[in-house]
Amino acid sequence: QVQLQESGPGLVKPSETLSLICTVSGGSISSYYWSWIRQPPGKGLEWIGDIYNNRNTNYNPSLKSRVTISIDASRNQLSLKLTSVTAADTAVYYCARQEMQSMDVWGQGTTVTVSS
Amino acid sequence: QSVLTQPPSVSEAPRQRVTISCSGSRSNVGNNVVNWYQQFPRKAPKLLIYYDNLRPSGVSERFSGSKSGTSASLAISGLQSEDEADYYCAAWDDSLNGPVFGGGTKLTVL
Image (cartoon, rainbow over all chains, first blue to last red; front, top):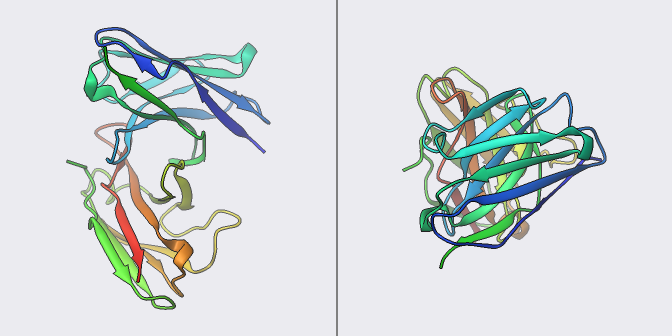
């Protein structure tokens, strides 16, 4: 059974870069699309972007200029980098596996707070 | 402001049936499949319904989905206290080339 685990700093300073890792266990990271999704406190879900086989990426236009998603297949990990963060980027960040336009497996999420 | 529109909250008594609506547009709900997610406080969302009306393995038959045009609905029958959660609809958006979500509906079982 595939499991996802996000990890990374819980606190990031404004204007710095948020970097998160999602480790995939129980299955290969290949042959699937993988997404990053975030949820600000008390708010709904926002898709950040996705990646397939470390070649094809799609990003939410609202974040595209600041986002990079990549895969390290040797480690079965995907990563998220979000530059020039502000308080508006404070959220729970989830990685999820995409299957037939749905997110069928989710990580538990990791909370990132942007504050000085 | 979410792309898909859901009521902020619904409530119903135990053992009754409740429906949650989700309204979108041609570029998302009207042209792509709708998925529903269930989220308990401080937990990750869980896929509840996919491809408009299919249930993943392990999801109770009390949950069902439907879609007509640019609107979709989630129905929960035989309400139980453990169904209290937030429910989100989602659909792929052709303009975004990614999924869009509703704002979420908080279900209260009275």
